[in-house]
Image 1 (cartoon, rainbow, N blue to C red):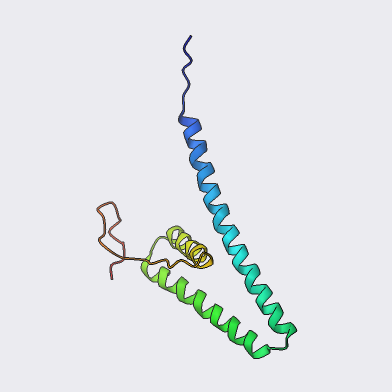
Image 2 (cartoon, rainbow, N blue to C red):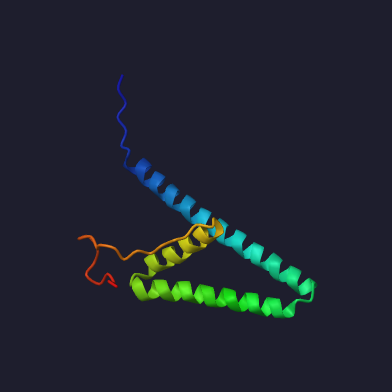
Length: 116
């Protein structure tokens, strides 16, 4: 007895599941990072270190704006840019440096790919 089964739908579901797991991991990392920052701010407020809170929040805002601006200036596709910003958050949580290398542009990249 032989059973023939079309695996197209199964492979599609596996691909979607993999993408969802990646997004879930990214959101988990961002939530963890955000929770840590809130705990730090809460502790500083409880200690009355208001100048430290102001400095920390300013540093965080500048850092996030710098990352977003850097990516937005180099990546024209909003979905790819958002993915890179999210991956930066995951890398930061794992204390890994995410290096965006313009490197050689492959033939599959659109002509609008930014070159520096």
